Amino acid sequence: MTPPERLHDLLAAPGFIVMPAVWDGLSAKLAAKAGFRTAFLSGSCVAAARLGGPDLDLISCPEMLDSLAMVRGAAPDTLVLADGDHGYGNAMNVQRTVRAYGRAGAAAILIEDKVTPRALTSAGKPCLSREEAGMKVRAAVQAAKESGMLVMARTDCRPTLGLDEALARVEMFVTEGADILFLDSPADEAEIRRAVAAAQGRPSFAVLSPGAPRETPTQIRAAELGLKIGTYPTGLLSPVAAAMQAGLAALAAGRAEADSALAPAALRAVLGYADYEAAAKPFTLPG
Image (tube, rainbow, N blue to C red; front, side, top):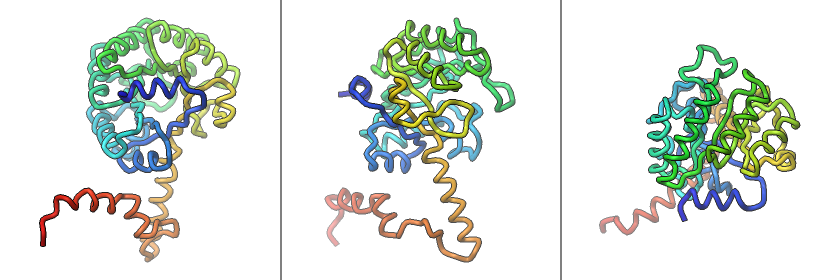
């Protein structure tokens, strides 16, 4: 079965899907070893890792494709929902992006309705008109047929245009053929329920990391509210940043490593030295 087919079956099965947010080979490999069958290639995490900065539309399509290749190479069995952002341009750019992600092995792609380039502020996300947003999702669905990849349509208009407009867009995305729906920044549980209803039986996705001005239920509560997928963009990224800071503080204090550092043997095991040696053995020349 192809990755999109496997993801389709997983979405049809009972249960809430926890989708770790990853950005490179190591994060994807660790998530897979921890038992997670899916992962979200998060634009915010890629921006943090590559740029050391915030997610403000500075990451390009080639950089995301390169990150997708790293994730797929390190965890080939993981079903990757890849962040396609705004499609990196108009409807024709969206189609090119979708086809590229499909060839790279993504199981699904996210396309959103925000305006790009965005205003030079991190507050709010100006969004396209409803008609243009629908057109971009229509273009994505059409292009995704080549690989079978699923399309997740996201609206960011809740904070700027209100709940009714956001719900109308979710309903429109369903009509346009989106497979997964995502209303970002719901204010409370009632809004989550209304977004799930607007998805008309198709799976709903949510960002559940704390800290942003949105409702972030627990995994159990999210399932009760009807959500199907929850991702946590800071779930791995924040502890990694904290660990790096701890390591740097240890070096600055004259120590070799932080107390939280893995033992050398444990780190080698995580990185797969033994697996490499076993794979390389048949190609080792005598002597």
